[in-house]
Length: 123
Image (cartoon, rainbow, N blue to C red):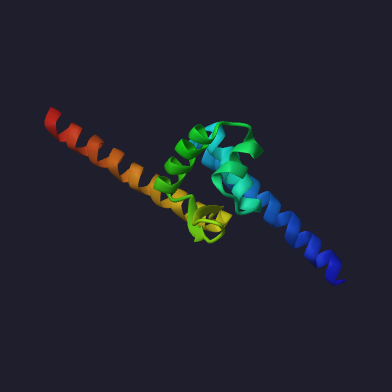
């Protein structure tokens, strides 16, 4: 039955998404950044609406959004209205996972290099 297959796919996606979000919280995002990611994963928003959703000031939300843009977990696009504005959206869980994997690998390589260079200095 197609509906059962779709339900299984949807439940597996939710499980996968939740696992990635938990890893993000352990490694690279604070709790407010994680809230921003979860909200933007479901809908695209401007800063004002996003600040209302998570009940933080626009200034605070802008700071969190900037950090997440720098980390690569969210993106923005220009939308036209009465004036130009940015609308923010989250990368898919798979794209976020790819970023997490690369960062962990990079950090592990740096740690390994420091351990090796520190070991050589002692000899």
